[in-house]
Length: 182
Image (tube, rainbow, N blue to C red):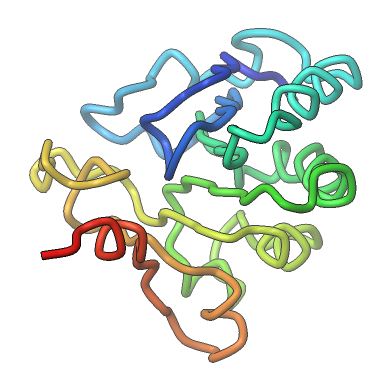
C-alpha cells in the first residue's frame, strides 16, 4: 500500500486533534472528489513499518484524540491487506485513541458481501473502528456545512453500536450538547 499524505495535528477529519492518514488508490473516481490525486495506487510513498511507527508515535500525546483514515479509498482490497494489521497494532499500542475511517462504499454492502470491498479483512477492520463515514461523494449533494462529510448522502456511523445492533446506528457527538449550558 502507498499513502499520499500524513497530517499530524489535523482538526478537520474527526473530533479533536487527530493524525490523519490519506491512503493511495481508489476506483470510485467520484466526480468532484477533493483528493483525486490519491486515486492512483502508486501515488505518494510506500506504507512501511517506519511509516507505521511514525503514525503511532504521533498518536501518543495526551492531546491527540485519535486516528483518521481517508483516501483514496481505504477499503480497496489492496489497502485492506495493509490496514488490517496496522489497525490491530494501533489498537494494541494506543488503545485509548479512537479510529475514524472514510469510505465510498456503503455500510450495508460491506456487511452483506456486495462488491470488491468484501474481503477476508473487512470484518476485522470494521471491528477496530469507532466511526465510519460511508457512501460515495455525490457532487450534486455537496454541502459545505455538513460536519465531517462532503455530501448529504454520506452517513457518520457509530461502528461498535451498529455491529452490536445489526443495523446502522448514527454517530452523535455528545460533546456538542454537553459544552453548552443554555
